[in-house]
Image 1: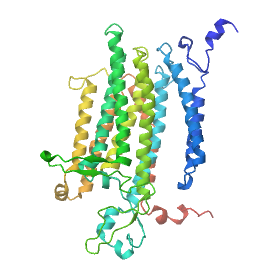
Image 2 (image 1 turned 60 degrees about the vertical axis):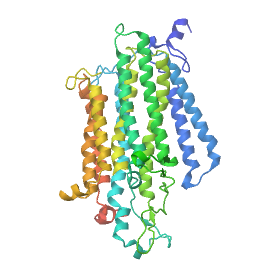
Image 3 (image 1 turned 30 degrees about the vertical axis):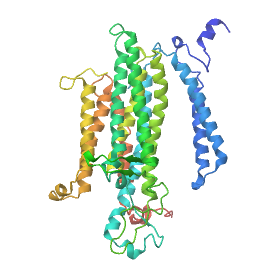
Image 4 (image 1 turned 90 degrees about the vertical axis):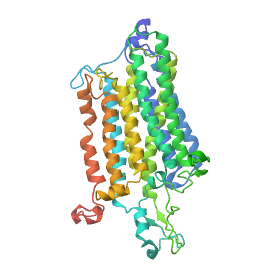
Length: 354
Length: 119
């Protein structure tokens, strides 16, 4: 093979020479898909029927490792991307629009379907199963024997908002997360704006710093989002005594500590006590808890995926890798990130507030 | 990038301010006691809160899609908006025929619609 041919067929594993077109011979998408496949199948096997099987854990990590290898190959190839080669669609209806932009929109279409199926499931169960609080207030659960004493649980819908929207302190992590995502949508647009400023209008060092800072801020806000979500789900937090504001010392329990679990088939809210008899209502809320955790968890996974992408992009920005020629890469990631924000705009009111 | 202004100002900043204000209203609507207001107009507090949340959520959704995601005001906005709206048909089908089916649909449907009717 001549030097010329070698130049046209760069390594499928290493950095790419973009002056000769897109790396069609890249192995990274295939490797990542295989890795995710192994990871998801093994994770499902590790928790089959709610029973944890530790034997599959090493294979879960094998899946993660394979995905990571694919990611590293992909990143090595993209690091050299300076916007030299940006393929454009040639046919109707997307003529003269970047193929990558069309592709990300097609991907977002499939994402819309994923979240719509989760939302329609939620609406179906929310309207189809009686609300636990309504059942408690009606009072006939005692005659039917759905009490802590009998151990019989009534299937009803207990929205997570019953716990989360019970006070401003409880709602604080979700509310802060809403603001964090909106601010992060704004910071990524600012990163794009600074990356796109034409050559010669700003100093290149200023461009590098601004793009790095805005992408870095987006990364930090995404991390805050996940930390607060974990706080809300598993950790809870302490509120100190602030006499001047009339705030009393108390502890905000996590959903986990409240017993609001994905498989909570013997749940009782601390308010579900009949004053006259002292009986406590017992409920099977696994359907409502599942819809909450699966929907908000799927959204959380999208945020986590965004953090992985942002980590790379922030690093590339730090090296001065973004210029007006390849700034569209930030725009395409931004489309995904805005979509994640968009989904939260619906998740927050329906799952956290209502 | 946006080639227009909102009220003579940068569209991204204006969108950002708008989203922050709407979110504050959203959180306040849940925090406030609306029982009396709801009763005055013949609704329960939960129904009124849901109405406020949907009424605020929709413009927020449109603001993010139109301005941050450039589905408005760019050369390719029209075709990309149509692309984004393509799954709407399936979304409507899912919401209507799964999300909003009658709670007793599985037992109340005619026999020929229910599982097990194969003859």
